Image (tube, rainbow, N blue to C red; front, side, top):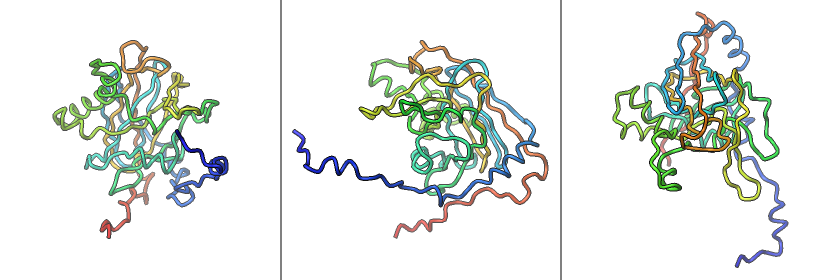
Length: 280
């Protein structure tokens, strides 16, 4: 039996301290990004089929947009340094720096030892959603991605279109890796358009119907050369079924935009993290 201390209420009442105050983070130049974006021209696009994933490439200084184009649909996003797949999106540190859900002006940070911005969100048409009465919000960095291992653990089933498997196949197809090698590079995601949170009573991760509408989008500025992979989740809008063929699913569109010549003169990609690396 739990031994409740006499000062339990006082202990619970201790005020929290923000671990990483955002005031000291490097500030993205949103004025520059917004000005340059106005003159940028579309150079490529990739349509991600329902219950599948696709890769795309974005050069440093370009923009990319993920759009809902047919029906309410969420997507799982992986990012890598296009020249070194060992540098990849670090959802845990991004969550620690920005919070559980991302929006305009916040960044996707890379893994150790580089720890630098990979992409900055410059537009979010779901920015109006905020945090709802259940504690839910959109574009989370708390869910890992649906995967066939957890599916098997919970149901005993074999399902091959979980986002983890989709991302693995897409990366293998893009790079020529075997599936086994590609799988090692697949990592925790940014859940684009997904509405999630933690229950107040049990602290469990929950999902609910995404508020995304046809025409909504999330747009990024690429801080470094990127290889991305996006899975159109088999959960559809994640209102009910997950990791199955039961949910209605729709495609997602990725578009890449190139700034006008000279528009980014003087801008340089972020440097590698300044820690000396000696661990002494």
